[in-house]
Length: 507
Image 1 (tube, rainbow, N blue to C red):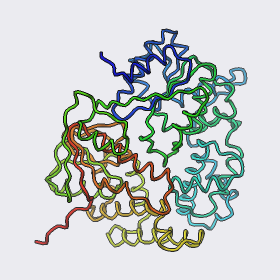
Image 2 (tube, helix red, strand yellow):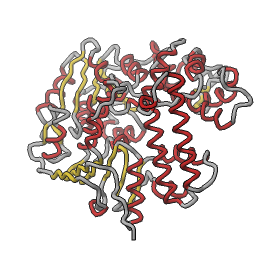
Image 3 (cartoon, one colour):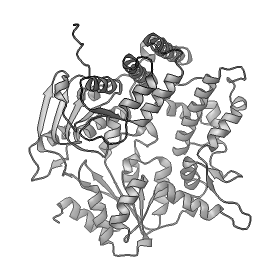
Image 4 (cartoon, rainbow, N blue to C red):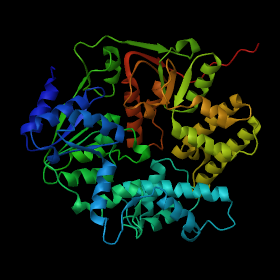
């Protein structure tokens, strides 16, 4: 196989260099191929080489390729093995066990003593929603290694991750954090505990390796980054990622992770800039966001088409349809199905959220759904006005409000088609299973790591608009989303200026 000059430079640095290495790899640049070849060239025992992957699927893939060259595991399984080595005691029969309901149960049992606003008289649905809020914030605070009574940092998390506040979430989470980084007496831990306890209490116990590889380093949380750095403290790390594919800041990833790794002492940054996936025309568009990206010399020209409005005939079998917002995808999918086309939406997390919201609707009519969504939006708007002194316009421009609005619009579209059974229609349009010849619709976040011969990108210019309340990193991630969407297309990219379906003509 002929390797690019960029790859050859990386191989040389990994084999003979003494520096840590962070590789800035553009979309479709053959990161996995490069990493595999790096591992093969090290010529040292596999127990000296650690590869930390994001999920089990990646581990399974890499095991077949580099299993004899490196010890491959997920970040979570690596952390869990460390905790078990320290705490498992066969003499006292105390063993670490995984219980992902640990904190959920604790919060449910103690919420009334933790919160100044929740009482036994509080509506059970409100209590449940508040508990869910607290757990989500608590998990995010832990992966960001927030300690102590730092309510302002917790408030920042709520804003960053678009969590709509209800009562005194900051106070409750502060109380929980006081006991978040120690092993419980019953040795029951959840997935987040694995990372945070290892990265804090057991940091000095993390085994070291001559070489530590990690992929998608732009998406590492602070806890994950700490584990990687401690594992490589007596050797060196090779971190691979793409600054411009940092799009997961909403779910725990540290938006500055790539740059923080690059700033570590004795670290060299090298590029991997040739895209082997996309046609030249798609690369020309991507270059507006990532100037260094290059098309493969023998890449096809590719086709980029601009359209001003949606027409159902625009969509073909096996298309990938992307949009920043979810409501337009729901509306389009329902229209495609009604038109006799095979279409599905990828996103079980959204489907579950919509089902949960549907449970709170009293009645099955479209009027009931409108009443519920209007009330939810009004309550959230009023909260921001009263709690933060915002005017109505500013309250409606907050990330929690905009995200709730998107979900409410999803519900309304589904209700219009459901004719009384929203859950049934959700199950009909949402699926994680690949359906033969189906048009697959998904948010851009869901599309990361995927590709398609033909991609339809709805509202591509939405990402270039910066609101007054938007922070720089949030705007950067919006541009990154645009870049990710464009680079999913291998042969053809359709840029549709709108996500709004034309109104049906009255018969």
